[in-house]
Length: 631
Picture: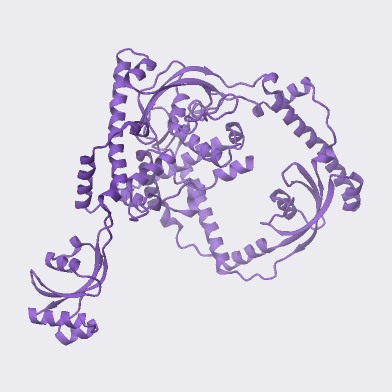
């Protein structure tokens, strides 16, 4: 489980500006929180700050991504796997790059940010292929980003690209390195292994209370209950308000006409064309006739003395300098030639390609237009209601009463963790996926009531922390079942270790593996596999293979096999070098990627040594929901 968490936290997240070698080292797609409720930072790197809210929100988002792929992962398991420290480390790496970019006065304009976002395929309308704001909003909502957060992250990515991309170009791969890589990766080893399954542990007695309590005392981190909080929450979102929105037919038709007039209902029409200057109307008309008859354009130009053409490719009407030429070009179809009297004389225009997208009718566009208008009205209604709620609170009303007066639902959550899970480990629907709300709930002390805060896509919430239950190690009665399970796992593991130690001694003394397996009986078996470093096979898992390649020929070693509960006592029986050491282009490409990764790490190390890094342990613990955090 811990390995799965570590693997997931190293994978790239929705990378939109790709700098492959730097993804692992710098996490170039972190998000900078814009809602800083306190000038105090969890960490600072040079002139860059990392707020407690930013750290908490980023951590919650990453934890939730892991839990989506592995629902069984708990917050405690993620912490054991080092997730909180890795998230903080990536934010510090990112801040160091941003500090350097600031020193170099690198900047990104709003237009560059907009252009970058509009190239992302996930935000395109599937019918027109153009950027679709509704698709954009929906995608961000699904990923728990606000538009401001996401656009800030894209701006940061573009700025960091300016800094690091020039440093990663032009790397060459030496022949000696390529040959060494082939020798390393192509080597195979034959391994004989005695597998000892949990069945060899035999029957286990029931554990005593004393044994279980000792287990809890020795491994409190396996049982510790996180800090829990009881909260009262009033929240309102456009999605909630849209249920009661009625859109007038006249408004729909007016919006359709506006979209139609602005050319926003479909991709704009385009033309690819060639045009020649003609000395007079007669020449222009004759040349057009010849072109329409299929005569080669070069021959026509030579025959009528037209000279070299001016070529335009995939242009819209406004991109054609002379309006008369533009009008004629968009009235003509593909492979059609026309003579045009322009402002500065006659022209011969040949249309090489014509693209005239079909514009949807009103009924086809109705659903999309209604959704757009309904969303606009819902967003305004959200602002009206949250303003009414805040006015009522300012007048002395409690949150519950103010919510009722404003028509905003008020919810009560009885002791949940910062990951949105109850004391019994049940994820709270409607809360567990709202990082901003959970971050705020665990940022303030009991009795505190927040100001209206934006969350999701243009939603707002106000919450009150009603009670705080500190993190603690539960009593035996509360975790007996879990303690018994862990005790059985540990006891089986200890018994298998005894068998593995015995097998190691006998094998090193020269006894045959099969004879040892026979003496152990059911639950012991011998298998052989021939593998490369990157390969696994059945119970020959990564740990076993790694140890096999660290051992010498005929050397005996021990490893965990299969699902990690099985033990293996093994010997490397043969080492086989690769048949060829001639590097391929693919090998050189892989090595170049590795060199870029190494260079990225050097850049990271240099930047972290350049700027002073300050951490606030108390705020960091609070942001990460650690047990030693003070509420």
